[in-house]
Image (cartoon, rainbow, N blue to C red; front, top):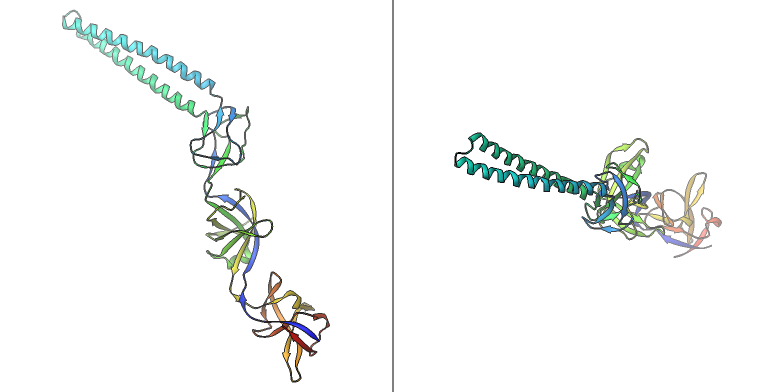
Length: 326
């Protein structure tokens, strides 16, 4: 019988497992207001790139602006009081020098100047505080990054505990992968993590940079992180992506799936062996491992150099003469 064969030879075969990973930011900032009020205007959209100091949201400042205006009017009054006190002091000093008033009256005028000066300083301090408070009504970006989902709308009332949005750094992403406990013994820093797109194409390759020392009691898994050296196109923070951990890339023996037979739970292959009158098909039990592509990793049963038959498998029996073709 004419049969096709492949010659067994070890070759580097990546042994992998696929998981679902979550992309997270190393530097993510929650944006919350420092004052209460109603949202008047939202100046950005989700997904926008912003710079530090760029305005994000305007909260209605009218009430605080009125407070600032009132403080400024009080300053004018205090400045007039101080100017009047200084004039009174100058007059008292001349009268004292002429012996027309007592030391106590001079000291009283001096105290009036100090009091008016202190009152003006207090008003100026209050104005600065109110102006700082007024600036808080315009929420700005504390750092460069990308705007996340905006949780408020114009007209909403916000407080210092209200989450407006998040800003994630454009760079510095991590892939979070939960690996089942049965594979925990194989984990080690430096193992390659490949992120895949929906078509299975590798879009990023990075090493494992963190392995949690404790298991998650809810999922019975180990948290693994891989820092992304570059940001893949179209990847968003909090996005789920396919991730593949490459456990080993060492040489291994593999045979095509079409060469494997299974009888009673045992896997077999036919090997073309040289006999006295030519080649014969020899059935051999094998122990198989992971399926990589269209081939099984073979743990035992065949060795390098043997010719495994890959055609007419269903017609073969142990000892049947064959004519192998490469």
